[in-house]
Image (cartoon, rainbow, N blue to C red):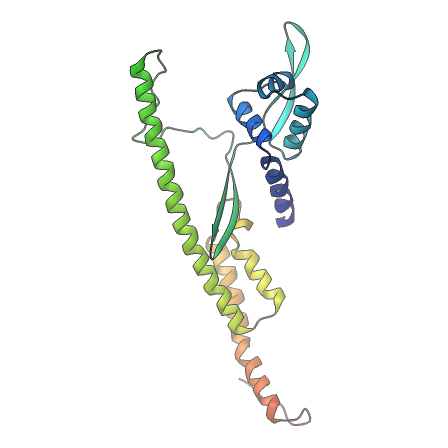
Length: 235
């Protein structure tokens, strides 16, 4: 599951790593368009546009649909296929790439304190719209800053857990298992560190830490006794 998610993210980043493809997505976010229309707007050949659309389609970002035309044969239109948020956090203790799906059926409501006024062809309406846009941009910036702060805090906590595993000198497979459980990328559903996940990690730690003193005692004892001597019994 984690491998499939990583492969998909690789395709998404490959698709988004090109300026032309990002411009295509911006245009398709406005409305579905057909390749010839995109080639005229972007000043590229039809073959180049189709190549970019193929990469976007392979990444699952766009899809093609046939539509009838009043002026000729049916046309192939392309439109956005998914709705999601993609965020990357890079800090001293944190490197996280998170893809958050937005359900198509979910109705997006206007948050309290914001409004979307009617678009009227006059200066006053434009002024009101720009004022609301400024409020939204400011709120998004505040959310981003707060998110980075919490991501940094999460990174420090995970680093402490890593330190405990290092001190206990557990085997690599066990450490990898714990890392996979507490890794935020492994929980795309949004239910990160729910009660069941916490219980699972605590259970692993409880069992292994109960065994850790025995390992250390046996190691110290082995330095002073030969294998032929009687083994020490532990309660």
